Image (cartoon, rainbow over all chains, first blue to last red; front, side):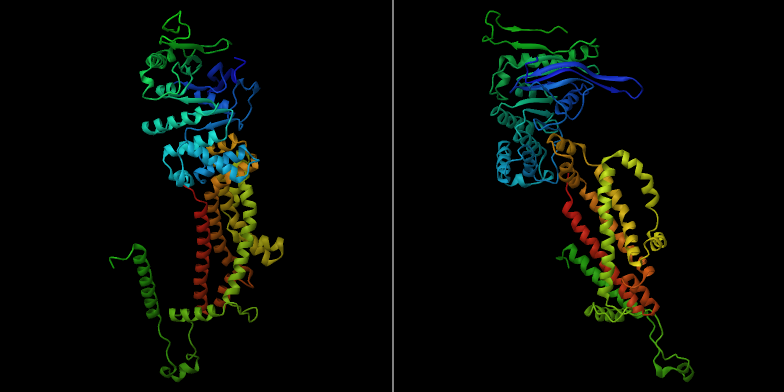
Length: 300
Length: 277
């Protein structure tokens, strides 16, 4: 865990409940993310996913625990950690292009104006925004286009860690699909480390290398870390044919349906809470041929 | 008529209302008796002198033409062109107003950013804000000992509040997401203030500025009636003392026109800083 690119160590978040007592969102949560990895975190509303994200972004302070990136403890927001907010958070008085150049100019202060514009235009083009559209204000763009601008802004900054807070939550299913593909396209060309919150199981399987499963709050914990054993590049229509797809999907559905509630609310008794690694492999070409196809169940 | 746009129809209707209004006004003014119809006694008691009365619009129009064709003449302290009088008023308004903006906008920023500053200063603002600006006049005259500067001070004190309150309100209401964008991009406090908070709060701030300039223009007329000497307010009062009602009506109209121009100037500014979410 200590060798991970990003390591979250014994993170605890408590709030006062307004009646003199305390409300523990999560306690001693620990997990790591490797460089270049795409990790999704799944869990029900209110389990503290967004709190974890805000702590990773440096926008919130945990009650206890540290987040280390490249071995250095994170404190406060930084350009090394880019954030794509759920509600796009574009500045409405700036055009799409200016919203991106705003970030790029902050990231690369030594660049000339034309360099900044060229770099920004390039990233907008990567998410499918070209021509006249990039000079429009966010209010003149559709929700999907706004989120594309937001993603372009984050990727154009080339942060060490990219945090996506339910980026597709407010979009319709068709738009969501297109932008997921664009996100994969932009991401696959880089060694960008991505941490993404989502509610959508299929989205998580399509995008992630690994899915962290969070139990319900209060006293939520990151209970499992499920590897997505489906090779890349993935295609949304082809992956459903992959033998591992439904096994993984069922595992996730079971977790969110049953175990997320059962595992919740347990006191950690001061112990470090690390997720259990789950690897689901049903193909013949499994890592260890002696074991053959297997489905590792997890003790609740 | 059916082919005219709505705006053209409205413009036509406006002209029609103006013409009919002027005609009614013109018709309602009783004609002065001509000297031949008067008895000898009436002539002896001065009945042949023109009586003071509300002038008909034709006279006001003639006066306007006379004044506007030479707005900047200067024939001594009591006889200056309307252009000079208005220029004095605008100079006082803008001086007091700009001084107020220089203090209100930065202070409003501070109050908007810090809830402690807001809570600490709010009682003072709430007490000082409803005071009629003219109530400050005696104190201003005594302390400043200069009528010119006192008029400017009155403008200052009346235009500061809407700007201060709106700036604080606008700054406090900036969406946290936008501030977070600035934070995740490691912008300095000053850069955040200028590139994120100022544009985000600008529509509210400019609304405050627009309200302020309106109030300042209302107040300058009253202030100049008190301090005298120059300005459109003094001009109105002076013409009243001269019983020249034609000039009074003409200057009332000029006050309206200048006020409208000032307001539409800020309307343009408002449109320039507006954004849709």
